[in-house]
Length: 220
Length: 202
Image (cartoon, rainbow over all chains, first blue to last red; front, side, top):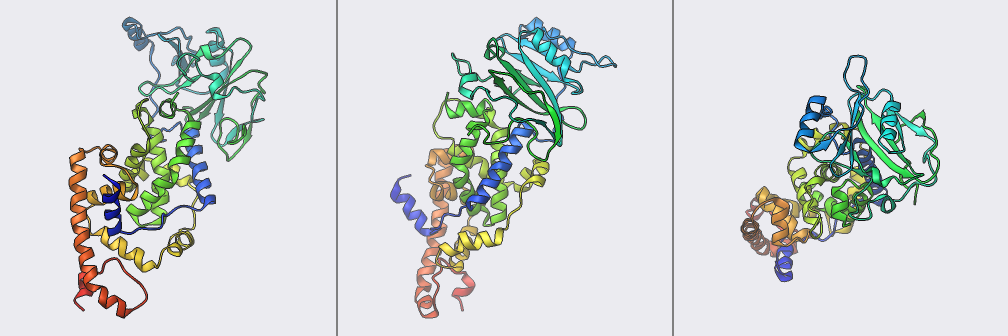
């Protein structure tokens, strides 16, 4: 469509003023949207979370050469795995969490797989204190894979759980994984980053802010 | 890595940049489609929640994400109730504003008269929904035919034919307005874009 044609059509309905939000309202709605996507990871909250792969399915995946599962699931008293970590063919790890009760076994599993990680489960209505928990978090560019730009935390579109790239965590660095936990002990969201230096332990405090990670604008 | 690839990979910072770039076009588009300030705010928020949910569909290569985002906004505006149901929990947390003062300050104060806006709404409302969407995307939001086709998920020829039908209808209304112009000049202060058949026969 050329300019003249567009102008002719616009002249038929001369909506001359461009409606726009006042700045404070725009800012408020942006904060709302960003808070929602950070806390819900974009999942509609009513959609049931998919279950992690069962050992039988993992065996099938192995047979197909899709993934090599080397995670050591921590079993709940009833024999159901609380979580699983599988190593994918491309070296990334997929973490699935069925019941988020105690983060320490998952943390130990990740360390056993070579990822120096700190894992915390954060219930709704809480957040970690202090935030940020490190003064030396890597920027997004620093954390991404130098060859293909892959980020540390990779959102898979067609598989349950969360995928991380362990190669992004260099010697001496610590991966920080914060999981937001719903009332039914399923995971609602994840926040992840890599710290060069020490990471403060997470003390849960009451909060009506976004539950994960530092407040927005902390690294401005 | 491109903004497209970063958003597809779930990079919230890149998505925030997309919000900054597209907030104003999306709100304008939503307001023009719905004619309702509060609904346009809902469409704005839901469009970006939907864009985040559907980010896996983004191709890493390609130009501006503008057609894609405006396409989502069009779908949300068309199915606002359905979109609101999907995100009802989120909408319960959405900060509520004061639509009436905003409307008065930001829109009515900047055009000749509220009457003109009402007349535009009336003329726009005479188009079929599909014609409205194509008109809003191509004329008011500045997409070309191919971009509008991409936004709506239809063929380019369909965009052209809908736009052509819209043009014919609006030209007919404009001709009626011209016939009424003598009446309006005598009558008073405010110009209007079109008038109803009922007014014409008085």
